[in-house]
Image (cartoon, rainbow, N blue to C red; front, side, top):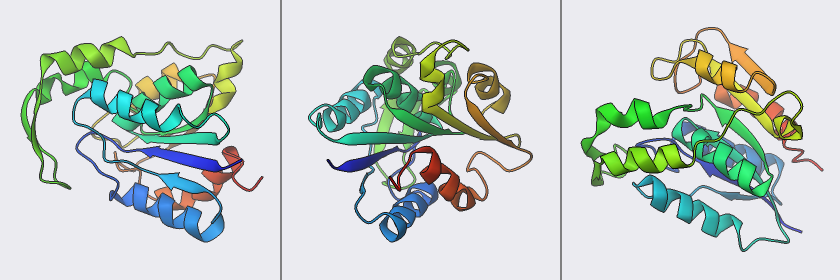
Length: 197
């Protein structure tokens, strides 16, 4: 049985983001038998979800764990619920269908230089996959490790704390949206996802 990690990057990001690279390198060094997957996501939310589902669905005999950053954390919450997977959410977006309204129009991904349009339909598609908060009696709550920094300048960290209050939370003072010192948290992530087993 192959163990896999699906890393889901954020809005206007890429598999070459710092956190994705740090996670890839950490896994290669410490868990060489684990398959690390981090695709360049499609620019539309519906296409991105189909892309991620296509990675997970054929792998019935494999085990998958999810790591999602920002908008990737929102996608990871949806996928973790759908497929009953463990997920680490890093400064996750909670209501991206509201946040990204101000980005409607032309965007350029700084990593890929791809020019694309953010549309009102994207907000509708994001709203359509919104998941409810794991409650205290829900076994699902044990599937999540949520990591936030209070200095996040893009997202209100308190939204994530409130939504995932019954899950395992790491709340660090200061920092920013990139999650400063992320590489120092990789052993905690590995332990939560039982990568050594």
